[in-house]
Length: 368
Image (cartoon, rainbow, N blue to C red):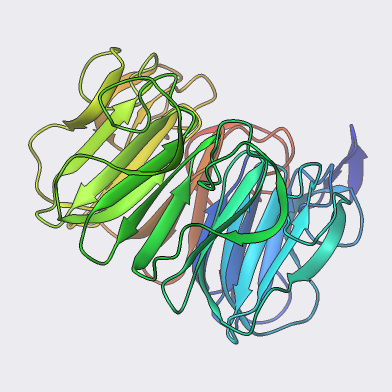
């Protein structure tokens, strides 16, 4: 093990014991976390604010286990912090907390997982914006907390919250996804609602006016997935079509232009999209044939196409047809293939690719 610029460089070798089989991965701003088949949680990369949950602030260049719990269900790595849900529905967060985005009742950073305590109702899903967090509970209620200067909490004001606060009184929420300073969420009826910062039309409402409460996007009732980037949003409909809107200076909307859109605009004509993940200035998606496609900003190879040229339309990443999941981070991207293997590419200054070094990669590389 060698320390280089504060980064712990370890040999790229398998973790001791049986080969790891991974069930979920999440790429954050400069770090990555994943849940293994045995329900253990592992994180690596940038750790300035303790976002790896390892009890310190030292970066890691290979996957390192977070505590000893074997009950993790899902993890979400965001900008300088992480939140995860356990099998019992409890929510745990750690890392940067300057605006109360950890939901712990204060603004103190944490370097190990801390439980977000608010009620006995289990959490179903959590999503992390730049400095705000939202989550959906098993009863279909939606809750948000953290920074709120643009109304991204959906509470009708611009006051920060340091504990989960319910958005409205509805119980029909299925899932939410937070952009940097905006939030979008789906309801059981298939409708889509967005709120918060709207300077680039990322709310999809036909204008650039901020909203402080959930506002319905169009009249469609067939939205099945939603994802928010820095200032753009993408969503999948039940017919397999993909739609994006908002900021488009780097082609992150995938419509072949660099023109901002204030309403949902279809990405090509494909009807085979299964999953989409927008973050920062690039977007990636997965199709029914298990291929991965990426587009947008690519200065650090985060599109995985072997170069650093931006793309304004979806381009297939390699030729593999075994992808089960894709997760785009701020300047890096990771994916999971059949067989439970993990692959990452893009920026790697803090070891966020998990390959044991700090070298950038422009194509997918397997995490040993």
